[in-house]
Image 1 (cartoon, rainbow, N blue to C red):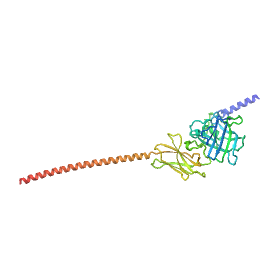
Image 2: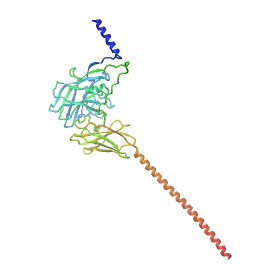
Image 3: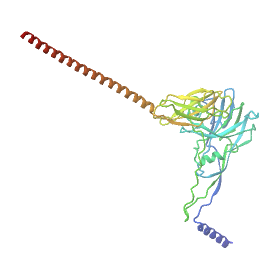
Image 4: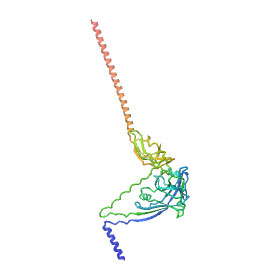
Length: 400
């Protein structure tokens, strides 16, 4: 038996060598992670923190249009870059709930994106997060039924793949409500007993390592295209941390400069959501600003806006949000534009023309003065000649 096994291994090694090289075999692994930090924030309690109570809440209160949002961070850096995620499941145990009507309990999962801001902590508040320049990108949503004590599984395969591919930074994840009637879902957090803590289980495969063979190098795989995520940030005055996901953003945003004027004309197609009340316009100067600022707002009947506060030679980026009942949609697509310097050039040209005209007038005046002097000299010479002729005539008359 041992001889047969040895012969088989020898034959396998020879076959691999004959094929042009040896490759390490792919293998699958499964890891389960618990959050290293978690909390929730409440839009109605701007300066309160809830990271130490061991519960995370997701919910919506229509009376004041406020949301409760849960944040979790799982350190999955031990999973190598480039692995293939076969499955990923977030398991949360429900501790309590309010509301079980049809359509309520719709919970969205997504990426928390720090955008260069400090990482959130268990003492973070809604106010801190909404002013930090961070943003949210929603991956998917599902209904969480009102069933206390049950375990809820969320499919996170796509999100985990983005993290392991390093295409989206792992700044944490969020659970937030899709706006509807009043409802809440309360989950156990990392301070709970082992059986009730949140768990992220990822099954993944590490691809076989290809090596160069006598026939040439292995083919380079095509890069995976980057996901379409909303990583924009905006000033705190007009950026609810939980956007109204039922409100669509405007589309086909376009920017162009009005001739030689220092004016950027923004145009877009209106949101197709019912009840859209207005559009808010945000701008960032690309070289010197890190945060988008709200620069204007127009009612829903308008789909244009003129930005007259731009500087020639600068590059600006814009996006637009729809608003309804005091809440905003996610960002539209962004558009960037370089402000041409023709307007400044025209001003300089006009100044040059003005200077040229002034010089021309000066030359004309000098020429006229010279002509006047010449005319005076001629008159003086004529007068002198006339006097000489008169004296000569008087002499002749005296002789006679």
